[in-house]
Amino acid sequence: MERRKRNWHVWAGFLLCLLGVVSYFVLFARFPVTRDVPWANFLIMAAGLGFLISGLRRAYGQSQQYKGKIVGPVLSVFGLAAIGLFCFVIFYATKQMPKAAGAPKVGEKAPEFTLVDTDNRQVSLANLLATPLPNSSRPPKGLFLIFYRGYW
Amino acid sequence: MVPIAISVDSPADSRELRQKAGYTFPFLSDSDTTAIRAYDLLHKGQGVDGHDVARPGEFLVDSNGVVRWVNLTEDFRVRARGDQFLAQARQLR
Image 1: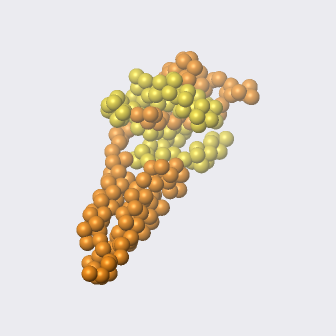
Image 2 (image 1 turned 120 degrees about the vertical axis):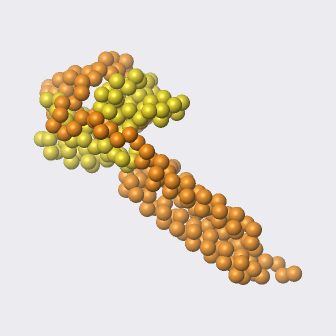
């Protein structure tokens, strides 16, 4: 029996699918231009799908020359599952947030609060608005209140 | 203009984050979510061990304490960017 060639396209396709998912969280989510719409990740995954399809064609269409009749479908299923999970997170999971319908609106008074800073000092919104900036004698023209999720 | 960061993180956690990131503006700790609830930003049970956190929300407050700009994202991946803050800060002058 003639020795068949290793079907590296299915492996490349699978690894590109994984890379397309993982690279979002470790790299592309850091930059707004690749974070808001994950186009870079979809490009990588599209390349992965291309290799998977090519690998499957080799495995089944040119099966005398190439291996991969078992490993091809298995890796394809895992690759597709990774892409599916990614799409679920990007298009659904991160959008599950309360509406914040009662948040203060433009023109309304910002609700007063008193919280502790990183030196455990009590700080109120009124303090922050009245306290002069370092290097200046005047209080700030305004504040950006940035509420964030924190360490969860 | 001064950014003020607010989360449920403890002062110690916030201090670590602030130092690591090299920020000089204040980080305030709202561990019992009073301010977060006053701004209607509570996201129930989303913390690591099921505690409540804030959903992302950004407000520009002028020197009279009046809200001049609000940004409430519908997707917590997509948060306000530095250039949006700068554009708003310029308008306030």
